[in-house]
Amino acid sequence: MKKLLSLILFVSLLIVASTAYAFSGVISDRYYLPPDTAHRGDLAVSATKIIIDGVVDGDVYAFGENVQVNGRITGDLLTFAAVTLVTGEIDGDIRSMTDTLLLNGKVAGSVTNLSHTLVLDRNGSIGKNLLTLATSVDLNGKIAREANGRMENVRITGSIGEGISMLYSRTIHIDGPAVIGGDLVYTSPQRAVISQGATLKGEERFSPAPVEEPDEGFSYFPILLGLSSLLSTLLLWLAIRFLFPAGLTRVYRQLDQRKGSTFVWGACLVLGMPFLSLLLLITVIGIPVSLALLLTFLILSWSAKVFVGSWIGIRVAERFSWKVSPLLAELLGVVALQCLLIIPLVGWLFALPVWIAFFGALVGSVAQANKTFLA
Image 1 (tube, rainbow, N blue to C red):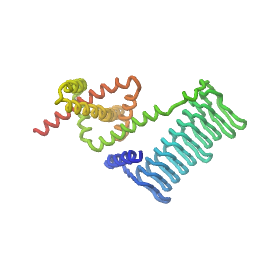
Image 2: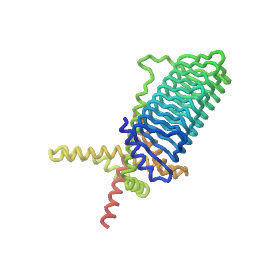
Image 3: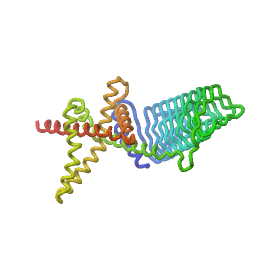
Image 4: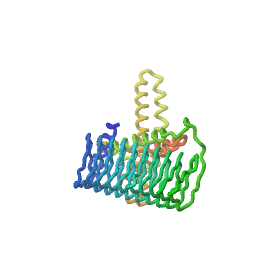
């Protein structure tokens, strides 16, 4: 896993280095930003242990076993780690996938996380919302707006400014001096235990849920499988973005200018290549060619979502005049398309037109390149 994350970081650095904003990346066993030290621009770090005692004027992407933020980050903190500890200040949001998330500092924005354990210490605060998917949650600090998500077991002793509007939990304990500033809306096999000394300013709306058997309990496997698929797609996008930027541009041009012929050629290839491979299997000499065609078809089909997703992201951003960088627009397009493709049973309905569009654009790009070369 460490090598995979390091590769992601490395390719990311090479891509983003060509953009207009400052971006730095570090791959090492240990990373330390000392106090009274400021890093200007976004920072990506892949290390076993990451400690930030200084100031990062930008976003931080942290991949490691142990991530500690004791200083200040003026942007967002994104972590993929075993343990994430925040005792400093985050001016933006936290988006984290970590086994344990400990918040003992100040987060000006929202916190979104997937973890086993989440602890908001009494000295910790979240300036906006908390959305989490976790097994064990202790909310002892302050949340300015709402706290929602799926928390298997949750204990609240702090304050939630605007209440809870959508929460599922097996057990909910609200102990004094907790203050829920709005409604308490939740689904659970049992009612929440609200102790004396706790304050609920709104209404309690309880929706009973059936008691789940142990072997039918909630499983994180489908979610982790989907995240793994998304991660592999993002890695592929980063590699293509760095290795074949001109190829992306040519595909964009074909999809923009020759939609009709692109889809005709694409449909012919999508239907014809598998059929041709089967025909070649009839002869002994044709078997290696058939296997090569099938392998090429599978690789190109897997890559199609990156090319088409990037094009969709760019065009949607232009259509709605979103003020985002082209790199971010491509990323959003790839992520959105990948989410559609992994929908059970109906994902192939989205995959087929993606394949047709990509193969057609690929044929047009090759033809155009040959004309230019021969000229």
